[in-house]
Length: 409
Image (cartoon, rainbow, N blue to C red; front, side, top):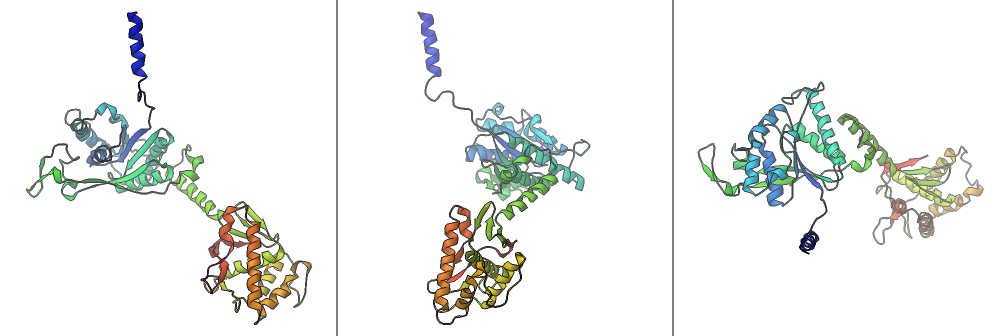
C-alpha cells in the first residue's frame, strides 16, 4: 500500500498545470567585436534587464587580438565582467553558452588567424566568413538572432548588416548599442551595475553609474531571404551571393512590366494576360503611347463633354504602329478593314468640335469598362486600367504606369 501511495504522488506532481512547457527557440546574441569587448555586456544588459529577453548563447566574431581581450576581460571565471554581470543580476552563467568555443576567429584564405583587418584581401575574406556564420545560424528554424553591429572594425559591422539582409528572418533583429557620453569609452564601464558605484573620469571628476544610460538602437533592414531560398544552403562567397541576389531582384523588377503585344491584341503583366477586341486594344495602346511619350500632365489627357486633348495624329500614329508590328502597310485615308471599321468613326470624334467631346468621353468610358470586365480574374491588373485622375469637372484619363515599364512587342 505504501509503495502504491508513493508512486501515485509522483506522477500527480509532474502533471500539475503549467508543468513541462514546450521548448522555445534558442535566443542567440551575435556580435562583432574588436578591442572593445564591453559592447557584449552592454548589449546583454539591455536585452536581459531592460527588454526582459532571454539570451541562451553569445556568439562573437572577432580577430585574434579581439579574442585575447574577450578571454581576459569577459571570460575570466573570477574577475571576468561577463561572470560578474551574471552574479550581480542573479543569472546562472551556465545557462548562457559563452566561452572560447562560441568565439569565431576571422581567418586568411590560407587558414591563418587574422590579428586584424588591414588589407583588401583580409576585408573580402572577412565578409565571406561573416556571411557564412549568419547563414549557418539562420538555417536553424528553432533559433532567433539578436545581431549587434556595435563593435569591431566598421567593415565587420557593414558585412554583418549585409549578411542579415541576405539571411535574416522576420524574428531576427539588428541593433547598435548607444552609451551615454561620460561612460562610452570609460575603461571600467561594461554595463549598468545593480548597485550604483562611483567611477573616476579622465579629468578627475567622479560620476555615479546611476546616471549611465545604455540604449539598443534598432536598425530596420530589408530581408531578402524570400527571394533567395535556393541559395541558403549553397556555399557561395559574399560577392557571389550579392551578384546572384541582384540578378533575382532585376528579374523581379520585370514582373510588373506592362507588355503590350501589338500582334495578338494582348496586354500582359507577369503571368496575367488579357486579350482585347480590336477597338479596346487600339484605345488602350493609344493611352500607353501618351504615357510613354510624356504628354502633358504625365500622359493623362483631358476628355470632357465640351473639349478634349486627343488629336487626329494620335489616332493615325497608333494605327501605323499596330499595322507595322503586324507587317501591314498604312492605307490611304478612308480605307476600311474588317478589323478596323471603328477607325473612321474615331477620327470623326477626335476632329469634331461640337459633339466630339461627349461621344469621345463615352467611347473611352466604354473601353475602360470592357477592359475592366475582361481583367476581373486578374486582381493585379486593376492598377493597369485607364484611370480618371482629374478632379470633378476636369476629367483627365491615362495610365498610371511608369513609362519605362511599358513595353511594346
